[in-house]
Length: 198
Image 1 (cartoon, rainbow, N blue to C red):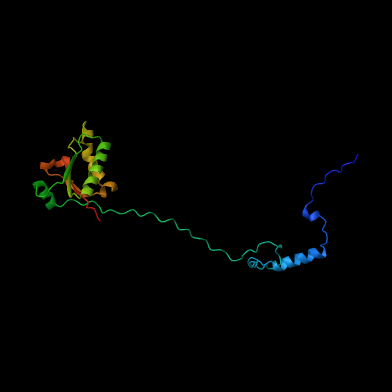
Image 2: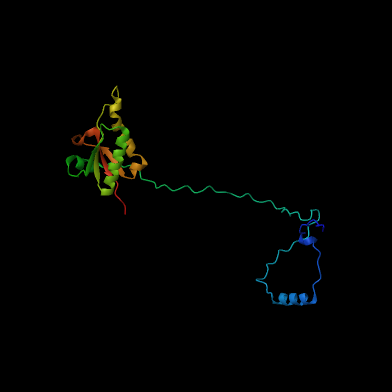
């Protein structure tokens, strides 16, 4: 019975023994090598300088010149279009509105509404007036009673002028004035609507 030798694992290429090429193999290799052309010229590697005395071989050289600090500027702030301040309605125009010589294009009655509902209704009303190109509108807040136990009843009368000064309203409104007694007096406002610019 033949004895089987244990299988030896393949050796890495460096440990394999090299054999000499035969004359025929050598000629074949030389003919193939002559026909091979490089794909492109290989880029030159940067020249390495001998290390300076006192530095370890291969250690990076340190520049002795101090580096100036880098100034990092903050990112630019987004530009918000600035709106002109609210302008009062002129005395002549107010007189024309009160006498009916200048037309009031639309009106909204807010009294009896909650603040949230009134705010939403007023903004929507003024956006519509702005789109339609209206010049003057009447905003009725109701007189309410300021002070005392019923102070909450005059809340819209106090709040609406403050709302009209806010950016979302100033884009729609040029100015406002208390209305004439015939249009509600202190419980209403004439509002001049900003024109659409094309």
